[in-house]
Length: 295
Image (cartoon, rainbow, N blue to C red; front, side, top):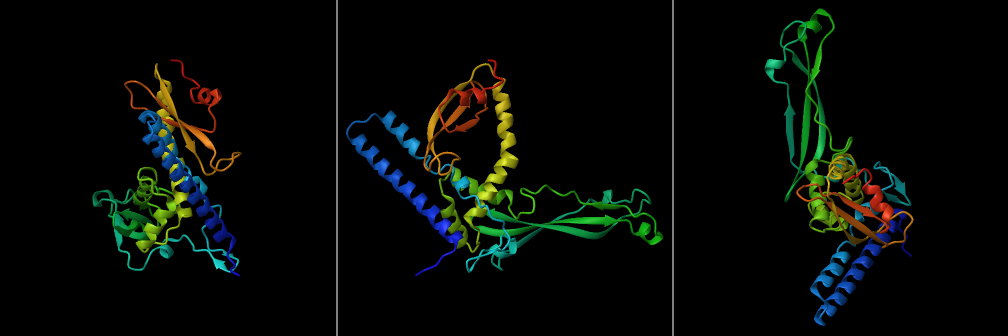
């Protein structure tokens, strides 16, 4: 008898569900190809096929980890921590990027003397370069006036401007997350396959971690862009809309593999192209999205 942890069971169960969906897609595609041989119109065939290509659209949500990243023991299974040092091999090169204040800006505002370096802050993030993985260390230096310190007066302190982190307290970098999102949504590479690719490169990056990264970046960085596009779209006089079916793995209140709809809104002569995913074709979904539109 083989005993596995709850986490391993859930992972295997999710992989089984994903494989079942892929099998369904392959079977449906085979039926579509058979229909094509017997004269189904190319327009209808393309429409049905594109509907099936969306099977794995919300795989990211399905893999969201509900557990903390710190090490936790579950049924004789020790879950790996998500610390940067523990997901990378020892031989990964480290690129050190030093952020210093220019020398002509280091004069003490009180004494006018040159300030000296008294400390530094280091932030480490994972950087993705095709066929190469490295660690980037952003070093932020701190400066103080030595003369003020010698005289025992209040010592002015300056720190190099700190660049915002993509995800606070995470080793995720813009390059790494962009690569994951492109592979997932452009190259149609599911997260479990990307996990294998990272592992082959010696990086123990799990699909749960990638899911959390993608969702967090979408919420913090991409959602404001979407909302601005939506705002500009509603100011137009003429809008065009079209829908396509969408099957999702996990949707609150719906069974697995439920059919949903993605609406595309566009305007003539403009670049605003927001997407809106909704569970049904009901009119209130369009009414909610178009609230404030007066064209």
